[in-house]
Length: 343
Image (cartoon, rainbow, N blue to C red; front, top):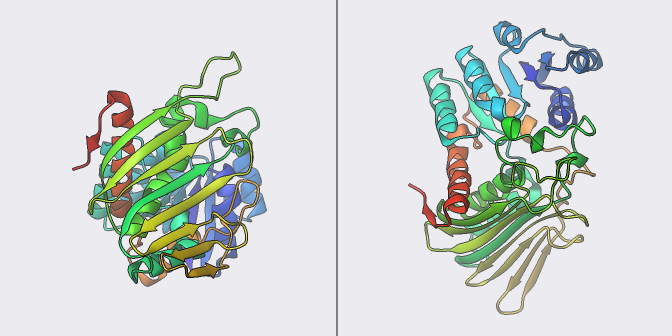
């Protein structure tokens, strides 16, 4: 059995980490911590585990082998490095960190302490995205020339565990807005599907809709529009938005020399290939989860399997670092009004 601790008992922990650990036959939850003591106590009672008085006490417990970091963005680096230094393997929620230096330090800490660091990029694990990767590697649509990927919903105020208290809108806690919440998912997904790194970015990122109670705009971005250039010369767009007040959108289209691949654009078929000779291939695999319809992410199962077999995770901190570089390049591009090349 893999003995785990969870730091942060908010929405992402309640919706995914806690129930998915509990459902995994090879995992046992040895303790939880949250700055909201009442919530931590209620969570501990629900999962029949220990409630720690501080995250430092949790990390000092020798029975705990691995931890999930499910806290606000600004705390990810400190908690992750502390956990790695305490000899724990770490599964950290996205975004990995709030600066590139933080992300690099997290990767270095994992190497220094000979521990695994995995980032919870669940979109890589959906059946449709896994199948798409397989088909693209076989050349199902030829060489990818362009792409478009988007993630839009009505905002984190409809997701938060505390109604009226949206830490996602607090710059001190979140640092970044929709780019770190949704944009990072699709940025990482494009690199995963294509097998190519993003090499340059032109972006417009800003606040177009979300406001504070006093009517002023929130201090983090609620919309992001990016043009990504890949190493092989392919160019495409990534859009993330918190101002979509209709059905949630979470889709990708890849345009190749031999056809087009549609991912989650059709409610009946999650993967569609249309070849240039007219052939149409349909796959009914799954439907991507939404805020209103949560499904098992697969992240915890992958994580526990890595720990059981002592195999480095595919979604390692080192791998996700490439996606974070693109995110920070997009922010720089928006701030400077220039195209930013990624080293």
